[in-house]
Image (cartoon, rainbow, N blue to C red; front, side, top):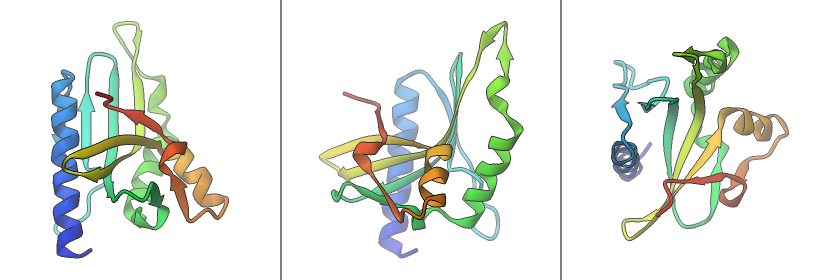
Length: 143
């Protein structure tokens, strides 16, 4: 990954952390290991939801390339997905788990945030699609 891409990625992560914080979430950035890898970029927790996401940045093209997902990210998400944490309960209230990618599209003055679930990304990847259109994702952090 080039230096500019790393800078954009870090900025996108900070923006997502800020958005979660503004919504009352406790959000924590996962520190990469010595090899520079981590399973996710961010864990974010609120009373009834848990987000385990990797943050990606795309320009204004409206398309996210699945080749931007690293092997260790696929593996980590697969392992979490297979454990079925979606069945968790806290105080008899269901906890909703979001596992996937938050795509930050645009530049400093015009950013939008989109969620691509792990299961949707896996579906597109397994079907041989090299990319996913932003408009096929769910927009989040509106306003």
